[in-house]
Length: 436
Image (cartoon, rainbow, N blue to C red):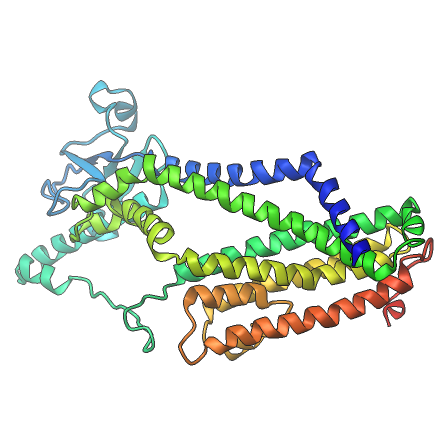
């Protein structure tokens, strides 16, 4: 045990003194928070209102396109023909972002054109198409039927069909929460991959420069392997704590200086439920924005998610770490590692895919079965935890943890055998039969 602790301290000192460790520990969360900030910064500074000129010489629209005013569009009508060059060069048209051209044949061929100065987003295109189509439908009704326009609007009011799980009638376990669990799982796999590769590189480096021969003269292979796995694992845990701390500080800063402006607008009633274009254009960005803020600050139960994320990081790292250690010990040449590392990466990608299936098919029996498989349980259990285990299924979480712990014990025994057999192998290519 004393020798194992010496190896652990050595691995810790080497990595804590490494510039790359601190660069990843500090720059990683900063870059992540910067991406979040840029995402919302550019989302907030999109064009708030499109000024559109409707060129309608045939007076098809009757100088009206919608009932209510919109915070997404400002419309003006021009009941004369307008050439494209006149719109481009004319001083009176410079303030318009684009013009919607209608003609006498629009009602028969159902074709109109929108000329823009700056390409609109898909949401703007969909909104403009929606408004034009709804208004032309009213024109058809007025010209071809005797139905009062008010009655038509009542008939055409869209039906809101909401889908609900019988076990979740209030729709509390929404897919957004599932993506939170998947994100936690992906972060776990990221740390497992980075520090698992650190185990592999450390072992292969010591084999290539023959330092391992000197080390094995004083300690047993099992002590050396455990010292490396635990020592590198502690650096992973330290780095995770630094990431969590810096991200928490960043999110607090966002909450105090950036997000309140949005929350205040929501509380002020700017997001009041209204019909028409507000649902289609103007308020959708704010609603999505506030749903994210609501999710981060109110819906995620960090008191449960973070402890289990740390637990599954430790268990997942120990499980995969045994494979990285055994593989590193068995490699005879550097070229051997490429094909076998690919297998490890494939297993990690399988875990991400299993987590995605847990989001799309949460009640699928295969998904529930994969949550007990140690290769995929770290991600799937985080997804199911974010969705919420039913009262009669909570035992499945602890069964998954128990299976993962037993798998770690078995993996350590296998890795120990591989380590003893392969740590002093040099210059001989590795074959599958060597593992057996």
